[in-house]
Amino acid sequence: MSATNYSINGRIWIETHEGKVLGHGRVELLERIHVTGSLRQAALQMKMSYKQAWDLVKHTNTGFTEPLVQLSRGGTGGGKAILTDKGHQVIAEFKKIQKKFIEFMKEEENLIKI
Amino acid sequence: MSATNYSINGRIWIETHEGKVLGHGRVELLERIHVTGSLRQAALQMKMSYKQAWDLVKHTNTGFTEPLVQLSRGGTGGGKAILTDKGHQVIAEFKKIQKKFIEFMKEEENLIKI
Image (tube, rainbow over all chains, first blue to last red; front, side, top):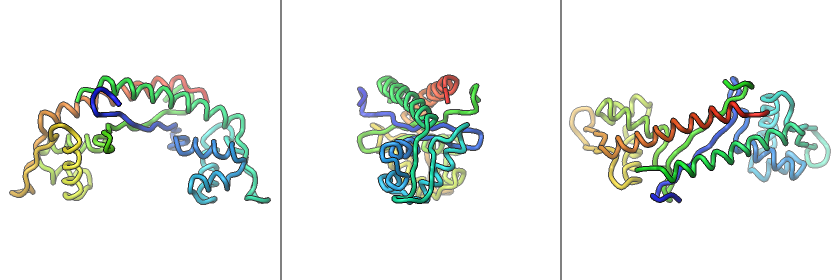
């Protein structure tokens, strides 16, 4: 909380000329995929349908030069999902920017005059 | 556009402990109120109903120490709406932060490594 009662909040995301490719929600999905090793589990945790999560990952993969998640259909629990090296790198980059963004908001919050 | 094909986009808003009090959309509504002098015209321009705009302004007014818009019901064209000095000040402050936020995003866009 700032000196006043006002705080600044916000969201950032990464775009290409075709639109949004990565934001807060997708990063969370990718991280849950990494932890669980399962798209179905990750989807469940985020209260998404399996199809929604599948489509989101497919769409995210096409937004980058290499896939962020390697997907394989079928098998017990709905197939495997593995976060690639590129996936790890992109998440780390997003979090670095997100951290600076939070610092930016804190600084502005302390300067706010309303 | 950055050296890569990725750009950073985002939104910021101002909150109190009760939630969001001002963001991009509300600032646009306030500016349109100022230009037109009419809540009905401002609402029309933003494809909102008169009631939606009225409720939004009422809610926004309660978020600050003084009202940002002075509203009066009735009369030709649905009553008058005047942006107060406080309204002008808050808009200016938001735009100052928004400008710095755009600079922040540009800088990060040039540093992005994905």
